[in-house]
Image 1: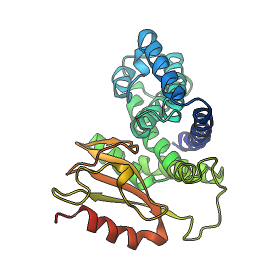
Image 2: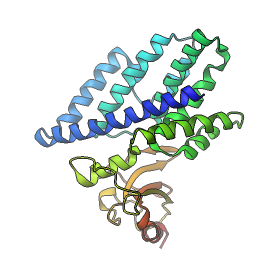
Image 3: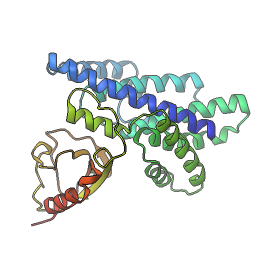
Length: 288
């Protein structure tokens, strides 16, 4: 578990660095050739759909086939292809998200680690999916920097507390390694790219201006923002809607995304603006 946690920390930091650069490069490219990024990704998705459709979509179907005695080479190849396609598709700004794909990528890394452990250290093959589950939580923690969220998420997904201790060890190790590598949390990086428009600002000291937190709020029927587009949502400076949870699924919004009653808005903000934002969201989401 120690080796797995350390490896996931490195892979998580690498994921963040590549994704940030992908977003920046696509933004620069789109300024010169409008709509070209979306067209390129659309054509690429069509080509992938014809040749290797397994890596399209969120990736839950990949987990379904991982237990069918797949080889280490197959697992690593799928990880590389899914990783590259995720970087291109999200970087282009096309509607989608990184939440479930990063869990699937973590699961693939866990599958690779399990295969290596089985071949080199005689670990029982029955533990294959244990490593997959641990790697999902660890990879999530290294990328998002929310180990408790990752632990609770995977505990809910498995419906069992038997992995709780091992999930905690792997998640904390991955978190610490990514932090030592000075890799900022991915949502902070994406927020600063959106605010700055050109590049990611260097991390400052831990002041209230740079510490971030996530606030969730439910949209009530008849509220002021029921039926409103994201671009028309008046939020305090520095606040960003990073996800809309609808029907149990997370959707990455853009300016044209429509807010509907029963949606759960996930908003990232500076810690110093927490009180102001909570009062503002309460005012906007309550029925009137």
